[in-house]
Image (tube, rainbow, N blue to C red; front, side):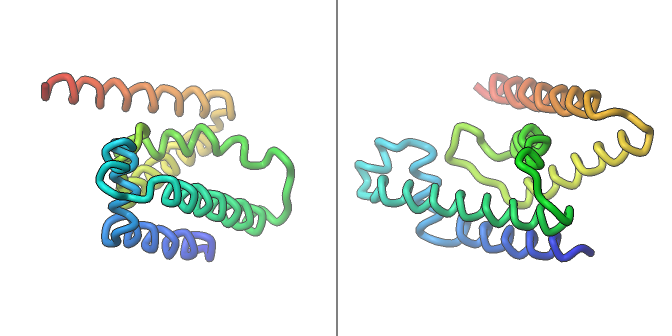
Length: 154
């Protein structure tokens, strides 16, 4: 198992503990669900949002560093191909893009699923353009399934 995967697993476990088992995680969830309600309940919204954005920036820097270590060098646009993939993983993993709901184990499952899809496409010699189209289709399918499930519940 690559060292990058082990580091990512450790960071994921820490994120899960933070989001699920701590007061700060509950504050983040409450702010994501309704900022005004969180403010009225006494949560320090501005400070929590600042620390959350700061933590996201630090984790993005760590991810860039790990990607550079894994690939053996850096380039200005080397993370561009992962932008759409990260959106797909978050949506497939069950995390609410609108905020207020997080699912770290679901993110891992979705990551492995998308890795499998990309690996199968690469094995069959499919180009990068088709991979992007497949990722788009997966995102659209997840949105349609989630929207249909939500409208059926009301």
